Length: 427
Ligand code: UGA
Image (tube, rainbow, N blue to C red; front, side):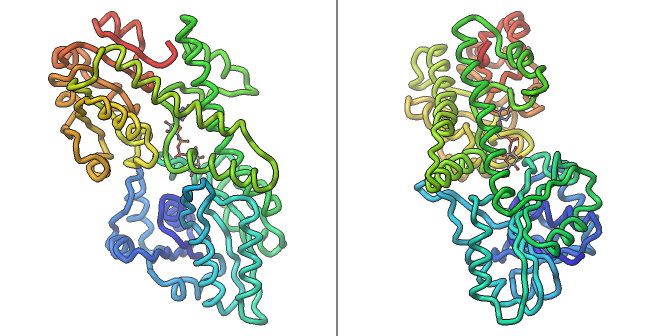
């Protein structure tokens, strides 16, 4: 099939490259000229394991352009994968969706299936359809569909190719046929729904996962006070197959460009529909409290933070990505700096992005340079590299052997045996 993808962010680019890998001819469209120029030279705008190789492999089936007019003429299916960032109110900003819909309607000369893959509030598809109906030239037909994407950054290619489910929200047989054929090579359960349900599935899924994380974090706080161990508790809960073991990893909370923004947008749309959802507010509150609790614990361990040197391991919001959007590291570093602490940091991927956010921290070349002379070491992101560091060496480099583990990457007993003052979350 010939398909166009509008928006070459994480979702758009990965979908484009993966659709090409499945044998389709894909044209990726973005209004960022630099991005398109670089992509034409096979240079990726994001870090995602395996993406460069897959792009190189499928070069013959991938083209890049900045023009929606040029990009959509030869294709039957158009995926909208543009950003839907949060407005200060928490509502999703849908102005780019509106803009590209207008352009599709203006430039199309034959039937198009317009599929929304961006995360959007329920009823966006309805709006897209109304706008298309108003703007499309007389006699031309089109369909609108919703096909939310569930890929995770860092595992995006695997997730795209092996999703737990493919959700397709359609209202015509024609749209259903096109999308079922397109996804035919992927052997995962397919759920065909109406457009509104498909849109809701995405917001509800992300909100549920965030709720699971905040739930386990709230239990972790109780564990700390009661002398229990959250890892054993989480294991015990997760063995119930109705609950499942995933997303029960206690820590300093979730970040990234999806959970925080989607929670707020879901809360907002629910409110607009007259169905307040205070549970989601609580989920956010617990998430914020985990960062504060972590800073309080460091303060407790060091007494005064003023002029202390705190080593930060991990800046990205999770491992295997350079993404720092809504990363817990940002709030935590800000809180430390407010108390007068000096920050030294290292991240395997996020350093250049971090340098744009924080000018006033010392960036180090590896974990050992961070530890050298620091008053304590804080694990903020669970990169594999940190799990494998030489702890004896770290101990000898630190001014005092204190490790505060915000992601529970180490076993408490082992760390105590090694002579560290060690604190994880909920144990
Ligand atoms: C999330 C969803 O998992 C994807 O299914 C979805 O497609 C994506 O959002 C999106 O809407 O685009 P992502 O933001 O890449 O994916 O990251 P996750 O792996 O879900 O992690 C989110 C945050 O939760 C991270 O900060 C992570 O550290 C935290 N987390 C995750 C925990 O604190 N504990 C856990 O047990 C799991």
